[in-house]
Image 1 (cartoon, rainbow, N blue to C red):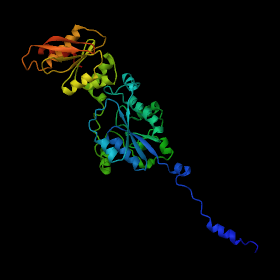
Image 2 (cartoon, rainbow, N blue to C red; image 1 turned 30 degrees about the horizontal axis):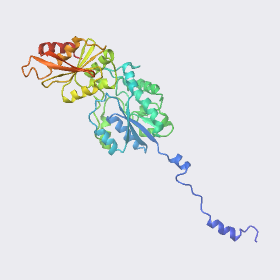
Image 3 (cartoon, rainbow, N blue to C red; image 1 turned 90 degrees about the horizontal axis):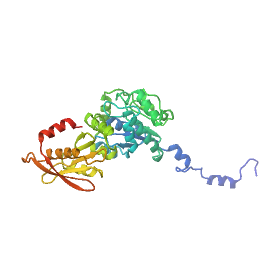
Image 4 (cartoon, helix red, strand yellow; image 1 turned 45 degrees about the horizontal axis):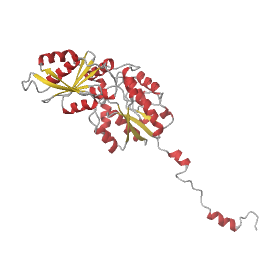
Length: 368
């Protein structure tokens, strides 16, 4: 054999060798090409929907996190349909727990104009969302907050407090104002391109509306009126319940949304306004509540809740009076009306005077 010449057998074997291939499903490839996922807190407003779109435009997979707080005043749910069907986003619905009501009774950072504990509420939601990261295999938490859009909860100081309270220092991405805020860990790690984020500031919504038109985003709610705790009349009922109520649970909160409310000494009286509210009052009544209703003519259902269990005739007479006055008795020329009242233990009846003048005086004095 000539020196330096490769034997023909070995040359033939080299030709048959295939170059080494790596499976697309190998651990190396999976780790390298795993898609980044973000959890975006949504409430139905335009800001959070824009955040979803901005992150999707960067190739980031998005899942929405929606908190049902019992204080949501949003009846328009078109935005949910738009998220699911037009933006292809999965919704993670989170129900707040009793500790949310504990927070509401005594928020660390106080209330806004009414009974809205915005800073504590945002921190609560972010803490719960943080626990969801591992379960949903996500790396980013993002919100639709805009710097200085809200006077209490979206100042630079407030945003910083919320992060600290949630245990998410520099780990809450706010894409609409990101260029005006310190870099988050997600930007530092290269999970998000900061240059493709925005620098929106203040209460003007011109840029958001322009972006909504550009991206074809529809169905979002108006920026005001989303939370019942910001509404003056509802906030009065919440405050009354916290300070004077016998209990404070989610059924009590649902009762606040219906009926006419009166606080008479040590008792609460709620009078239904229509058939739907009458049914809800019966459904939400506790075992030791008393329920009142006229025996022979159409009338509201009235709930009497006494703080300390008692058969105080003064309270029973007041509830019976209101039931009679809001019934059809006056229209039918009836001066006295038989009212049935019942608890989980027994049924009783009382004759109530249909005295509209007395009823008006009671309403003016004791209405919540």
